[in-house]
Every structure is written in structure tokens, then in C-alpha cells.
Length: 308
Image 1 (spheres, rainbow, N blue to C red):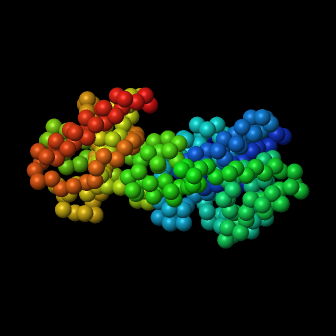
Image 2 (tube, one colour; image 1 turned 180 degrees about the vertical axis):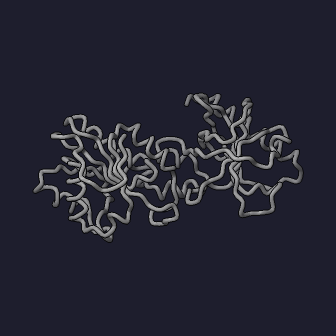
Image 3 (cartoon, rainbow, N blue to C red; image 1 turned 60 degrees about the vertical axis):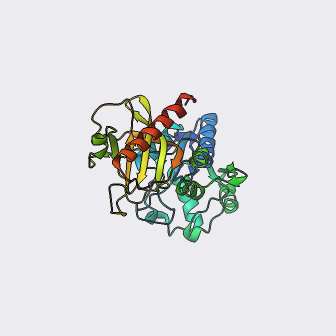
């Protein structure tokens, strides 16, 4: 997948042009994928180039909420859907454009023959553009517009905001259903205090970068990918109240039973599958170890009953 970080005329698809999916696509949830898949399928049917047009926000920007995916994972996931061209200018480049300038710019830069978006898509300065205006602007230019209905979960529209709310509440099944895949992290493993190894349950310590959405503090059934192999695992997310008095220090620690090896400096994928219990302060380290062992056993039983 070719990635373009600045606006510029591109001869995408040559004489056949391109089909462009438009949106922020912050979680690549099932609604986002419907829009992207629509553009990819149209492009294949018409010999055109499948493309995505989105934009970048600074990490600390709160306009779209906290991040659900890293930039690298977002790129990999969109490429896996069959997208060949990914246009992602800074929001500053497009925020002052009128709806007309925005649409004409995408048609010109992407050599677009078809534009795809969701029914809640807005564009142009102050989000003045709507799907209906998009149709009006594109009709005289012979550019097809396809507006996809919002995906539904439990009879309500799927949105990244709903996914964040589900994560904050520890409702992993709901978050995963709306994402269309398990919620996962892929952060670098750092050195911790080594307490888990002392207790006989060594853990990998991953830190959430600034701006990322945190799930509810507590203990989770997870599975961890190391190389090409998946391992059942148990993950504790929170402030480690048994051994840490600093409530501002959040850690994400995963125990992988049956694995031995040095993962420091690597970035294994940890998928979240079920919330087990809230974080709590134990009276003894032995109680903490028993809790970790029990969670790991629950994880092994969970995946023994399922084919993932």
C-alpha cells in the first residue's frame, strides 16, 4: 500500500481512475470496513485503484477521542482489506477548505471515479458538508457516490465512541463485536520491577502511550502472539495496588503460562477477550500470586473451549 502524507495530484488508476473510501477510520470497526470494502469491491469491478482518504491528528488532539489503534497497526489493517493507496494529510491542510474545495480536491488528487462514505460523514470547514451535498457536487462531474448505512450492534449504530465506552466499562465482548475483531494492543515490552518473576509468574510489562484509550482497570483473559504462535494469557491493567502506592502509574502486565524467553524490546500482540475482575489490593504477595495463577487457568480453559 502506497502512503501519501501530503495533498498532491496523483494519477491513481490511470485511465480507470480510483474508488475512494473517505473517513477518519480511527478504529477500523465494522462500519468503517463496510465503507472501505465497498470502495475496494467497486475498484475491482471497474479496473480502478482502491484508495482511502483520511487525515492525521496530533496525538494529544481530543477532536476524535482517544486512539484505538497505533498508526502502524491502522496502516496494516487497511492494507489487509485490499487498499492500494492511502492518502493521509495533516488535518491542518484540509480543515479550512469549503465543502466544494474538499470534494474537488479529492476528485482531482485521487483521480476519483467513485466516492464512498458512511451516512454520518461530514466534510469541509465546520463539518458543513453532508452526504446529500456530496451527491449534489459529484453528479455533474460524473463521479459516483455511494453512502453506506451505519453498522448496527444491539440495534444501535456502531461508533468509535461506543467502543471506547465499552472498553471503559470492561465490556470486551461488546467492544470486540463492534470492532469485528478482538481489541488488541501491540506496545513495546519494558523492564518492570521483576516482582512477577520473583513470585514464579513472570509477566511482560507494556505501557500505554499517551493518547490511547485505556480499558477498565482489572484482570482480563487475553491471548498473546509471540512470533507465529498464540498463547493463552492473563493480563492485569491498573495501578498494582498491592505493591504500588502511586495511583498515577498505570501498568499493563501479562502472564503467559508455558512461555519462557526474553521479550524485552519486542512488541507482542495482546488480544483482550474477557474481563474477569476489578483490580484489588491483596493482603499478601501469596494471595496476589494465587490470583494470577487462577486468571491464567481461566484463560487456558477459555481458549481450550474455543477455536479462534
